[in-house]
Image (cartoon, rainbow, N blue to C red; front, side):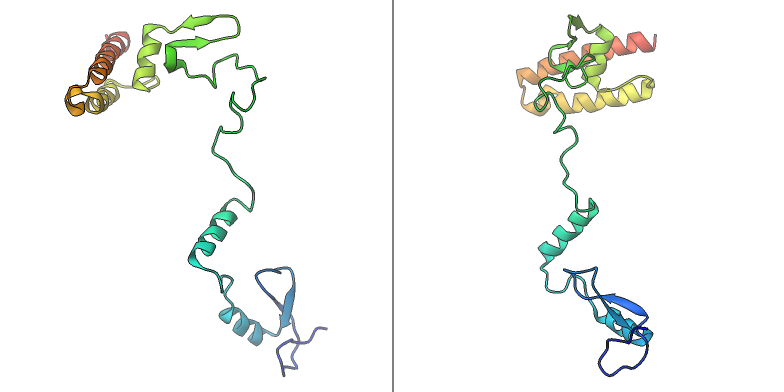
Amino acid sequence: MRMCEHPGCAAGGDFRAPRSRASLDLYYWFCLAHVREYNAAWNYYAGMSEAEIEAEIRHDTTWQRPTWPLGSRYSPNHAPGMRDYFGVFGDPAAEGTRETPRNKRQLSPQEAALVVFEIAPPFTLVRLKARYKELVKLHHPDAHGGDKAAEEKLKVINQAYSTLKASYFS
């Protein structure tokens, strides 16, 4: 039977308490009264600055394992030999085409309009109109001091809106 490690206590040491933050697997053994006293006074973060505490909490959030942004390790830049048959890692909005190993397929007007609106079917007319208003506010030439690029983008948005409205709600 263990004895309580508190100086001057003759009771049994049935309860364990960590020795330090650096060695959490080494314990003191105390009686119930002294383990309560020790735990009430013990501070895991004692001696650490606020920045060190924040870093420790963030490190514990991922169970002390390394992390990286989603998709950053497994993209075409990191795996040039990987075959992307369905264009998952490509950017179909860049040229309006979807690359496959054998050919380039031109997007249909409806697919191109969905890419412009960044919306996927099924959607309602209310949702389509709301997204249209968002895009118009964002790309209106008056909001950009009469910029020609913004004017061209607004023309593309208007054409895409007409295409989607005619395709899905006529």
